[in-house]
Image (cartoon, rainbow, N blue to C red; front, side, top):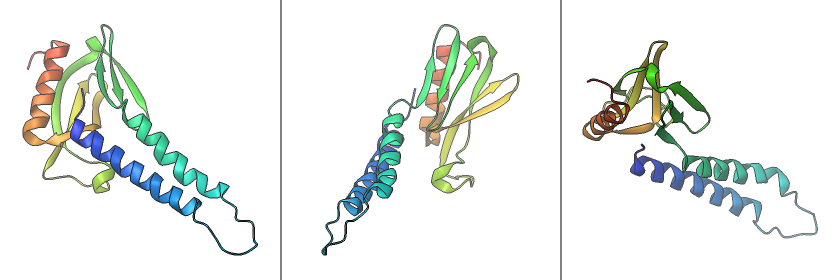
Length: 142
């Protein structure tokens, strides 16, 4: 389960960063000095790696667990440990940790607390549909 608009836009931004960095690395210089291109390689590789990781972000429900894949880490929650799914105001990288008035993200409630999932963010109506679909997939009473 994921929001394809958010995913595609984030991947597009990362690819633009990588392309811009690649342009800076490959920029021809005049003169006889030997330019060092390798330090700029990190600015190309890191956004590319995150863009590839983005393809695998979202929520996967298996028979025994719920896999919550973010941009930088993956969390696993036992399926029977999920008490509910709700939406909360988006707070993440795109708005520097502030609370969005327009966008919502999914939050999975467990016995240990709430796990927010910023990679599954959307406008209010779509976020509610995604939360409902996840609850149905988990057979969690609403």
